[in-house]
Image (cartoon, rainbow, N blue to C red; front, top):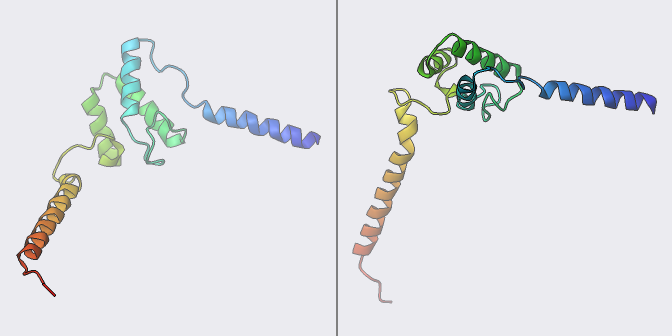
Length: 136
């Protein structure tokens, strides 16, 4: 029973330590802190894929948060930070995907399929309306 309690306490301690990654404020200046919080909310964790680096406890997300913090401290603009991350990890790392020649087919293909499906449905209905009625 004692081993069980010690193991349970150790597990709880380790779980608390794991969730405490990057909990403190990054900057003393409230404007820089707000900018930092906004930026890490707009960057996708490349390991988790559906979480921001703000919400992820993966070590890569912690490294990305540290990188963003260092670049903000170095005076980089938001665009420069996003360009740096996109060059290193691809456009996938950004939640707001930029519109360029590589991404426009992905962004506009649903609209193209919707228009194609609407055209096919319109043509099918029009052909069927032109058929003679069967009076049997």
